[in-house]
Image (cartoon, rainbow, N blue to C red):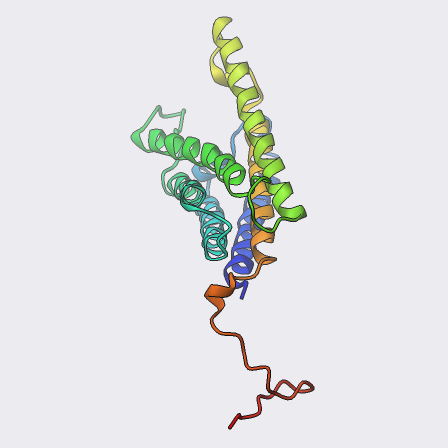
Length: 229
């Protein structure tokens, strides 16, 4: 009954594990405070980065399907969650700019995909898990809303730093430890996604979707149905 949500959470966990593993394996060669996560896509074995992000995107889509089936996500919320998944797939397929060579079309597409992803997930969490909706709520839905709100505040803080830096003549990558900031935002958004998945896994399908209730006539001990006349 909750297969899509369970598979989605599993894929998200696997994708995050792959990316964290890449970070840990590259600690001696890559500064996580300054280098973005996407830097792994330019290194040897970059396909592992693509695999990790693709698993995260697939898991997100599965969670979106589960939320929609349980009527917890409307059209706008579902589209926002699918935009996050699509943005992740774009970042997985198109490598970022390799600044040792120069800017590239692939890098520009990668950046656009990452912007879409990072902006879409907070929107999805706020819309789907908003606490004033007339749906069954719990700790997971409230956590999803809280992490979504925190993501928005995080993005606004980044925008404020960029604005202040621009007035001082600094480029946006010079006003903050970009790698650390990106990883912090990614962690918050994945937490919001996970909370949405847990919420979906803990909900039942609407009764109208479950079909007719089973006959009350049966063996209460072993669950075998007794034929009726």
